[in-house]
Length: 334
Ligand code: KG4
Ligand code: ZN
Image (cartoon, rainbow, N blue to C red; front, side, top):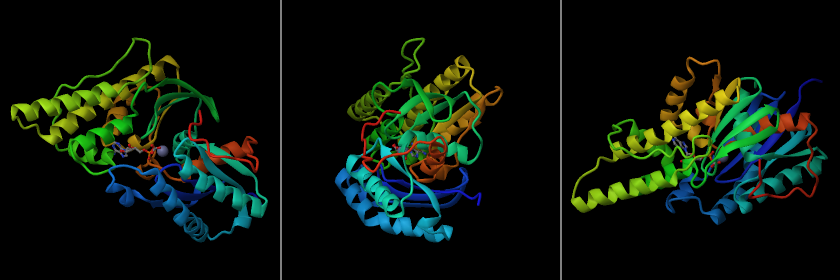
């Protein structure tokens, strides 16, 4: 039988997610139980609350995914799971669920790096063509990752302070927008004009690193000054100006690195890949180049298990196997 199914579990932050993939790229189930509503009143993800939700949700999410696919655990070739990075208590729920299921059914177990998952979300749509460069922009990570082959990652640049998504969430808080702030700023920015001149942190000429803390401070100072002078700044203009600064740095550095390394594809990954300003800027930037731009559909940008299944299926094929002692690794390197 040439149908091969891999089950994937993702619980690194605030989504309990289970997916089943057939033959590496064909999704047959993709279930995400979001906890956003529970964290909203705290203005961010509360780790302890996240762990408790995962414990409540994991079994039903798993059953729902199997039901949707019309399959049972016996049909699975292997079980893959996010082993890190992320919140340790949250990761542990997924890792233990995966171990329990794999051990009970004596199936191979495969550990997946969360960021590898974000990158492989694009492979659900299009085959990778190496070398490729991935622009990873999530709540916890902002980096440029060079891939010369499957599961071969070299970080050529990364943020020295805040991640892009983190900057979005912090600026959203300053503008008193609800959590998660990224999508809120995105919406607001569409109604405003980039009239405020916020800084762009280019860093050294030859650096592919990023920095967003100066931009955040600049937004704080600008809001503070306006308040003191009794001047009114339109929040939509602040959002549009902030977004323009982030997007310009991300797209310019991605293009420079993509050309320098002679890559065939630029693969955008992570929650901020959902940002409409970034999607548009990248489309324009790569339009008349030989570099193919891959941006996942919105539902695969933020955390999900489909991407873990996509990465897990490749790792499985390459022979990666985790032991029964697989643990959660909150600070796992790519
Ligand atoms: O990848 P992700 O779901 O979780 C992590 O692995 O961190 O990314 C979440 C981040 C949050 O900071 C959220 O505000 C941001 O992605 N985000 C956005 C948008 N949608 C989600 N940022 C800007 N614009 C968006 N449309
Ligand atoms: Zn993520």
